[in-house]
Each structure stands twice: as C-alpha cells, then as structure tokens.
Amino acid sequence: MALLTKKHLALIRSLSTRHGRKESGLCFCDGIRSGGELLTLRSDLVEFLLVREGTLLPECAKQDQLKDKTFFLSGNEFDKIRNTVSSQGMIVVSRKPEMIPPEAPLADPFVLVLDKVGDPGNLGTIIRTARAAGLKEIFLTEGSADAFTDKVIRSASGAQFAVAVRSLGTLEETAERLHEKGIKHFFRTTPNGGKSLYREKLLYEKSAIILGSEGSGADQLDGALDVVIPMPGDAESLNVAQAATIVLFEYVRRWDENSLFQD
Amino acid sequence: MALLTKKHLALIRSLSTRHGRKESGLCFCDGIRSGGELLTLRSDLVEFLLVREGTLLPECAKQDQLKDKTFFLSGNEFDKIRNTVSSQGMIVVSRKPEMIPPEAPLADPFVLVLDKVGDPGNLGTIIRTARAAGLKEIFLTEGSADAFTDKVIRSASGAQFAVAVRSLGTLEETAERLHEKGIKHFFRTTPNGGKSLYREKLLYEKSAIILGSEGSGADQLDGALDVVIPMPGDAESLNVAQAATIVLFEYVRRWDENSLFQD
Image (cartoon, each protein chain N blue to C red):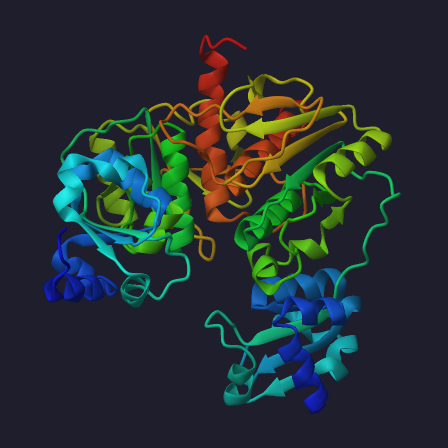
C-alpha cells in the first residue's frame, strides 16, 4: 500500500490558494460524484487519490492504473487535510485538462460566452448544464472565476473534464476571434429590452450568445443584438445560471423538435 | 434614534437555530438585494432593521413606517451579530408571511411541487425563478428545506415574500389535495425514461409537475406520468434548480408563443 509523504501533504495544502494552484497546475476534486466523473472521464490526468478508511469507493476508482496512486487515510488524517464538511471520503488530485490553443476551430454549432461570471457556484452549474445540453466547449472572458477551483468542480459535478473551458481574452477580443472562426451573429442577453430569445430564429446559427454576471450584466459589444428572456412575473432578473440554462435548453428544445425521436 | 436592546440581541442570536426561528416565527434577511425586496414587497412584516454605519441604504429602507424600527450600528457591533462574510450592511428581521390555509384554492394554471428538496441554495433559486415565470405559489412536500432560513432567502433574492410557499403534507397527501382542488394531470420529471416534456401538450393544463431532489429524485406516485428533459450530452442528470428552470420557462415560452407581444 502506497504511503503519503510530506511532499504530498505540502502539495495538498498549497492547492487551497490560487497561487498554489497556478504554480502546480493541479486541481483538487472533493467528493464522490465529481471525483467519480473525473476518474471516469480522465483517469489519465490523476496524480493521486486520497480515501478515508471505510469509504465505499465507486467502481471507477478501482482501475488498475490508479492502484499505486491511491492512499488510504484514517478518519483523523483525512479530515485534517480538508476543513470542509462536504467531503465524502474521496479526494482526487489531478492535472488540469490541456488548454485548447486559441487558434483551434470551434466544436459546436453555437458558442456560449460567459462575461466575467465570478460566482463559483454559478460557473460550475453552467458548465454542468452545458454538458447536459451537448456542448463540447464554453468560453470565459477575462475576469471570470477560475473553472478549476474545488468549489467550481463540485458545482459542475466534474463537467469541466468533459466540456472544454476556453479563454480568448476580454469580451471584445473574444468576439473578434470568434468572428474570425466563422461566428456570424452575436447575441447579448439582457434582463429587459431586446427581442424575445424564443422568437430569435438565428439564435443558434453560427452565433455567440453572451451572458454577463448578475450585478453588472454583460459588457456592451458593438454589433451584438440584445435578446431578452421574457419574464411574466415581477422579478427584476434571473440568476445567471438560470439564464444560461434557459438559453442552453431552448437549443435542446429546437433540436428535440427537429429530431426524429420516438415519443 | 432608536437603540438596540439586549432583548433584540438575544432574539437575533436565537434566529440562527431552527428551533429559535420556529419559536419566534421570525426570519432573518441578510443583504441589500433580498432585504430590499422584503422592504418593497412586505414592509408591514418588518420587526426591525439593522444597518451598519456608512451603508448606502436603498430607497425602500427609508419609508416613514420603518423609522422607529431602524437601528444603526458601528461596524464592530454589526459584524459581531453575524459571522457571515456576505453581509452587505443591512439585515432585516421580519415575521414570515401568513401561511395559506390548506383549503385555499389554487392561484396558478399549473402547480410546481418540490418533493423533499433539501438544499437551501436550490430551493431559493427555484422560488426566485418561479416568481420570474409568473407563478404565485409553489408547493413543498414534507422533508423539504425550510423556505425561510437566511440562506434560502438570499438564494431567492427574497422571492418568498412574493411567491407563496405552501405545504400539504407528504407527496401522496399533496397529490390527493391537489386533485380535490381540480388538478387533473400529474407529471413527474425523471433524468431518463418518459416522454420529452417539450412534447407533452398537457404539461401546463390543470397539472402538477413534480421535481425531486437530485440524490433520490421524486418519490413514485400512482397515476403520475414520467416526463424527461432530453439531454443530448452525456451528463447523468441536471441540478434540480436547473430542471425546475427548464420546466418553468418552457411554460413561459408557450405563453410567449401564444401571446400577442410585439417583437
């Protein structure tokens, strides 16, 4: 059985800071669900696994190639590592997926751009929902949250190991580069004003749909059309993760409508 | 200027426990946004307001009837009251809205039922989204989270003071009572199996749509039809708040389609 060294412990501690994560290039995945996704999707990225004695390990944690990387700890030792109450007895430390180079082509029929979305829970939820909707990538502008902190990984259920998180600079720079890659229409969601997104026929046709954080909304962008999510109620706005969900699943609905699925 | 008494302080402390909240019948609203909603929607419920010196108060906090109920505290005093970092300098302590009696008729064309949704953030987000979609009430079954803890109020941006949160017992009891009130169709969302909800024409016709918590899903219910949210991606499931958002805004989309809105 492999033994945890002081070097491992120092590494784990360093991952609790942004600086430490940046320096090591590693991330920290706490919990059975998101850890399980990581092990299933990208076990090649795993550096090591920490398991609290007595934890019922999912099948995906029993791969041969993980054997030498799995460390069993007593309850005391395990709990010392993390001071979160949400830990479920398994922690995966892994490398981040390879960055997709800026010049790489686009993978999906339309592009979701998150402009300075800073809340980790919202960002994670959006990545998870994008995966469910079938997107292969999403774009974050400069000033968005880091998609590989443990809170974002937990909220995403590890979906950032299935959906590529790409960055092309500020909103303006991102738009410019997307245009070069063939994006023809830019839509900006707003809490009020603009055409109903349900009525916009070109919404998913070689387009980029931009969502901003709640506080400030997406930045202005020359040439972008405003689309609104109609709200019959008297609410001021929606949470950005809910707005993204509506955008993503309106795409799924149109796909469902045109597909030959059996009822 | 009114002065805070020891009685006030003891009351505030007691509100941090479930027992204390139940006993007092009061709730605790921390933050400018959700506090502002409460003051705008239901200032009649307010017991008192705590304000950190130097906080820029929203207009809704300057109502005449609130003058004698507003206490200004020094930064130190204010911070002692709460050990959350999210506090924005205004805390509203208020009574909960009146419970709607079980025999009251239904207020909306369809009914959203949350079956044992325990996560406060998800519950709050769903209440906020239900408000945006124009619902006047939602139903929680026994075993759901308390809709009036400060975490739920924050996630809902105070929407529980606009949308009635009703309870009619267990899922089975709830269904029975809803049936007596004229609900004809019961739909249960599942992560897989069942008809696409986008293709279900009766989804919002005198119907109840039941969503369960992620872990276990909604309980089985005799006579309920399963509907599924199609997921082209390879994700296992959606967060329950995202599933609820899709259900609520498919309703809005159909409403938008049939309305005579100008583009």
